[in-house]
Amino acid sequence: MATVQTARGPVDAASLGKVLIHEHVFLMDMEYTLNYRPDFFTEETIDSAAARLNEIKALGYDTIVDLTVLGLGRHVPSLLAVAERTGVNMILSTGLYTFDAVPGPFEFHGPGLLLDAPEPMVDLFVRDITVGMAGTAAKAGMLKCAIDKQGLRPGVERAMRAVAQAHRATSTPITVHTAPKEHTGLEVQRVLAEEGADLSRVVIGHCGDTTDVNYLLRLAEKGSLLGMDRFGVDFAITTQDRVDTIVELVRRGHAGQLALSHDCCIGWSDFFPRFDDYRRAMPNHHLRHIHDDVLPLLREAGVSEAQIEAMFTANPLRLFAG
Ligand SMILES: [Zn+2]
Image 1 (cartoon, rainbow, N blue to C red):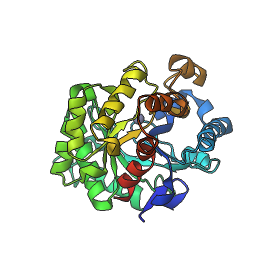
Image 2 (cartoon, rainbow, N blue to C red):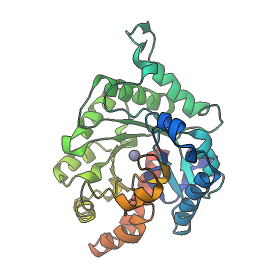
Image 3 (cartoon, rainbow, N blue to C red):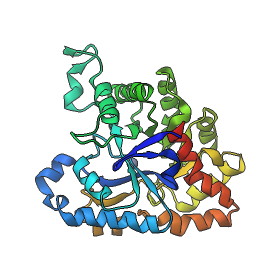
Image 4 (cartoon, rainbow, N blue to C red):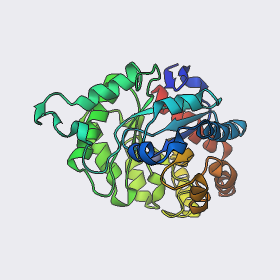
């Protein structure tokens, strides 16, 4: 069985158990945090993140995929400190999250640019996967990029092709943030396929934000995993709509291509002044929401235990083990 990299080191893919495919331990604008939020760099921040992870471990969830890459405030030392205090496997990610331009360090450096060179992002991502991240021995186990309603902007396409090339070099799976209302998942599959990526090792993220089953079936046809991964983001679409869409996809025979998650911030975020503010603004956006509120609805609608089990276990396992 394949080996998967986690914050605590490599584990056998078979031991991943139940996986929440898209979460964030911390989420922030790192420059803002460095300047204005000293409360991030505390033991309490680490402890509260670990405590929330341990809570879902007790409910039977064994692994989370942390999709916090460059652009979302990845802070490896804090992630590793949390990993030391929880029994949950944390699969960490590399890549770039942008809806438009690339960040300054890549603006003038790359193919055909002022400093003409092979795409520097590919080397950085591959190094994160094969050597370790941020000077540590912890290796990334997932690649990530994004495309939102702005579409395939030049910076977005550059990051996406770099992610695909790192995937080909290392056989690491890919998750892509997409805007389902604009059908950007189809664009993702086109670009990744052009780069020779294995679309069955790709999660089209945020598919759960739409009820457009025809669009989702087109994505499923190409073999990708559909991320029904924003449970608790209630301002986008209701929980019942998210559930009904899953039920319909299951009815059409696609239980083997769905993975459920929250895309929540587990421990700390500067998106709100205090964690309590986040709780108040998004009361369902936490790690227990699927277990406590969503699974009963799926069961009630006739989704079987075996199908639910596949969404958390067999489907993510296939993504990681190939
Ligand atoms: Zn996310």
